[in-house]
Image 1 (cartoon, rainbow, N blue to C red):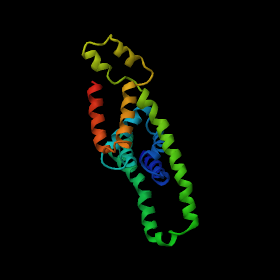
Image 2 (cartoon, rainbow, N blue to C red; image 1 turned 120 degrees about the vertical axis):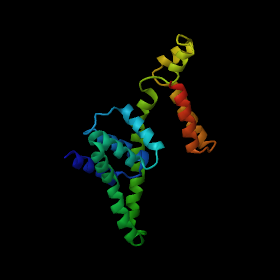
Image 3 (cartoon, rainbow, N blue to C red; image 1 turned 120 degrees about the horizontal axis):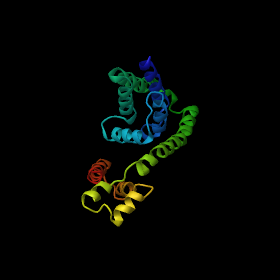
Length: 201
């Protein structure tokens, strides 16, 4: 029964997940609640791992959630559920794309989906921003304690802040490096991951 529930839940994600990636984060989060009582912080970690591992975010997340909920069988059911709609839709579209290329109805539907996709991305940001920037623990506190600055002014500022100051700096630096200096996202992820690993000890 759990396998069927996982399949149906992720089939809906695959069917309605217009925009892919971050656009369907909120849809995925809501879909997994019946199976796992997962905090937003834990889910943010899953999204981060899914983003840096090979494969689409939805597939990686479905595989993980299915495994956590019902082992290998659950993982297979959730993964198959999330990829099946795309397989069916693409197969049908490939046969009819020429016919509907100039359709006003199809173009109108796509024009309506685009702003909705932006709304879904905004909802994803709302889901991820709190655990990412104000979750438990603060980057740098453990390192400062190891260096003997556990009672210093910098330590007090970092540990007492309502948001993770270093995470905010990493966020801003990432945006600047990618948008202004056109650095490779892959390179930026490696740099920021290494920085977080050093500061998180």
